[in-house]
Length: 130
Image (cartoon, rainbow, N blue to C red):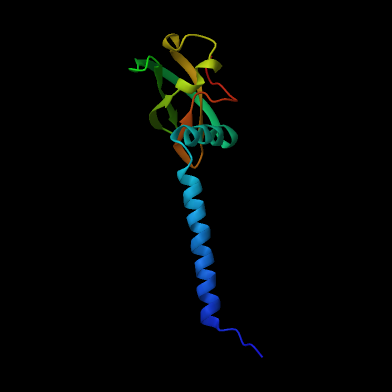
């Protein structure tokens, strides 16, 4: 009768876990920075809380390719702490109701309660622009 070797079973289990970990690592490496940022925005939108903020400026930079990049700078206060942040809104321009260069002033900001540094002013499903 065959009696299983505990060391062999442990080694096979460890190899299976290492292979699974490798697959997860490869899968995560294939995610582009743009996709990671999109997922972050949607996570903040789904689980975030809303507070008042102020858009201080929108920087527009022309790339050598001719495509413009838009970086929205904003600030907000939570529980006596002031936060300043920036959000790349280049991929969200189609969701804007006006020219990115003309955005300034009061807005709403969504932030994650456990990490208030993680915040957005706009995403694919929500806009704090007034």
